[in-house]
Image (cartoon, rainbow, N blue to C red; front, top):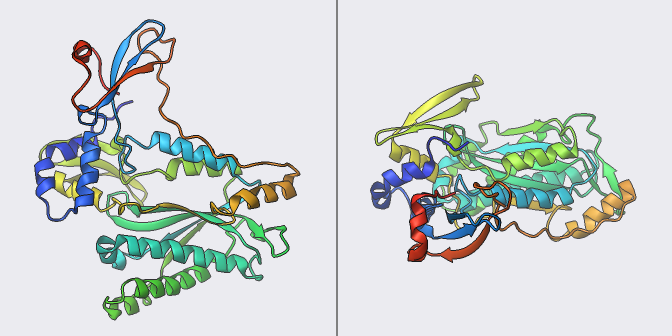
Length: 375
């Protein structure tokens, strides 16, 4: 079901203010413009025809931006398909590393440095605990996904990490974790080590920052949240499919949009209730824009035995040891488009017969614009 309102609608109605805003940088404005123009004539489109009944339909191109609420389906399906082929027949664990709110200021003016430090620190901590014989004594792996938002669009940077329940020993054999239903490693110890290493990395990343900030960070407990292992490897895929390509807010959470306010649903985790928030359009855009990642920043990263460099060898080796099966990892081809069935005859799949730019299709096809709608 199509949502009643869209983020693009909010951006479009306040575009003049967005362009003039000094709170938004050029990269954020470029991203917002792409989201505004997604699946409109501004990005061009293509003409599809049904091979059975010759029905014609014009569809406008998507922006394919990773922050766009309408452009995550294909990217998510491709990524999940690739992860299915790499799934190990072992339990998987989930841990979340959260930054304290005192670091939000650094996240706003140096997001790439803070988030790079967060990724590096999380893997350093997981890798160290896994390598310690008191906990596991093996090389493990990790898939980490960065989320920067809370339900009300506030800045809330945290890292979701998926860790297999075991690792490869120095002798090259798989070793299961001694978890007994709980997370691999003690959470309080993880939190203390995480805090110390993250502060050390931030001191290097921000050498001119006030030392008082870093000293103050040691006075607060840091949150490392550990969940029980996933019910099955298949549950890992379900989780990844829901969370890897999430954005700050989906169109379906918007309730209404007008020139004075934007209303959307959010969950208040303090009491577990669902609530409605109202913001001015520009405040909504400001909050949304602070979750636009720096250009080229990688928000899903793979480490250890699950890294791109090592998994082609490590994953088949582990599966052979545990299941006696020989597998070869094959790079999955990217999906180009969703196959759409003809809305007229409901039998054949539509085929693209013409592509056009922002100037629109040739004149002989323009009359069908009055009787068709874009995707």
